[in-house]
Image (cartoon, rainbow, N blue to C red; front, side, top):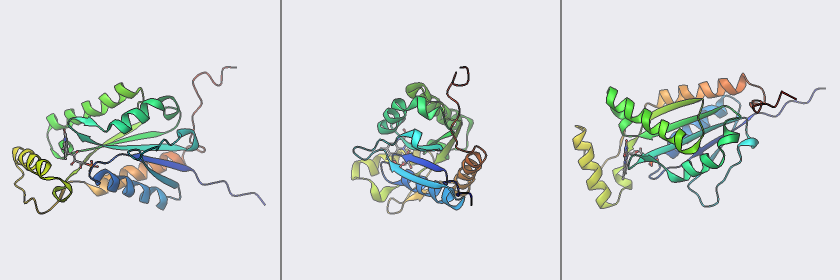
Length: 200
Ligand SMILES: Cc1cc2nc3c(=O)[nH]c(=O)nc-3n(C[C@H](O)[C@H](O)[C@H](O)COP(=O)(O)O)c2cc1C
């Protein structure tokens, strides 16, 4: 009797300052698991976290934006693994408040941040998603709460700082994860040939 092939493993690597990108990563993991994949979340912000892309059929990376930059831990990990990331299906999810603005200006700002990550790391993900994040007042210290309330006001959001506000389009996150699952299912083994590998 033929042995059942192992289920493809998908890495979901993320960094999250106040926990919202962790929730996004967990939602992606849940969808991938529903599609019978072995999805492994890894918090790149944890000391010593350094997952190895060749162990996986595909990789999803998620990071949030703070001070107009994605997390350093994600940038340095992706830079260190740019070559092997490029050899398998890969996706990048950028979580920010800018992505909550439904304007061309905001869309181009999030696009620029994602392009910047590719320039900084040398890794160009196959697919990207800009996800609207959250105002997590309950997680902030006082100065951050005051700052974020001010920024929210500038965006026309009058907020009660006693409550968090989530802007995330969860069905869009789930559709994105389902597309990743479909890509992995359509590419047995996941891994592509390295450039020049076939030219022996
Ligand atoms: C101190 C601070 C700075 C932020 N800077 C930006 C920014 O420059 N651009 C932006 O679009 N969102 C910015 N945000 C919003 C975050 O990206 C958003 O709250 C996101 O949901 C945070 O996810 P995390 O909890 O996973 O870090 C900032 C949030 C905080 C608290």
